[in-house]
Length: 276
Figure: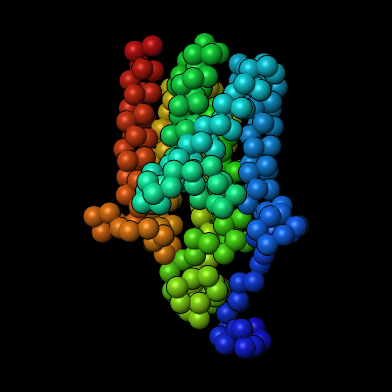
């Protein structure tokens, strides 16, 4: 039970009062938790690349790992940022295209990041002369720690809040349209579903069984499909942060295409595996 104060007239719920800054130098400048989330996520991806090679699950040496890493960084950052502008903030982007580079203000789209990573994988496939489907299976396991940390940072920032609810763990978000209404901490749901759960799933699938018996590309297809499903589930608790499309939140709408792509990739992998 929380204490009732003038700033928290609903004592049964926790009032979100976390700062987005780790260290603040001025009103809008400092070290942010969101930035730390990216550092931790990319560090985890770099470590995984090295660990896969050490255990014989990746063909890429140290130089190739560095190339793959920077390709992923650029793909995620550029794809995520451009995806957000095109998919969620098109009007402001058209009026002022320079907001694309103002990444410190936030605004990244996971679906855009996936597209960017996919393009990075295609480029790296040609650079390393590695089969694309094999590259895809490795690449798809790398961003999940970053998604987990990123969703935690969304919660700390008090953004992407959930729908109004009366569950005991609901949170009051001062920045929401109705700050006195308790809401689902949907950012934490997403961290568990999109980040932790999918990370465990892909790692188990990556390490169990013999790689030569699983069609190359199937793991990536499973990842796309699984992410779409958990994202759609999470959207049931999240307040839409942009206008609806055919009555669906944008997260659900874009996830339908991701699911279709995942299913197509699974069929492609299995067909190629049988013919190969």
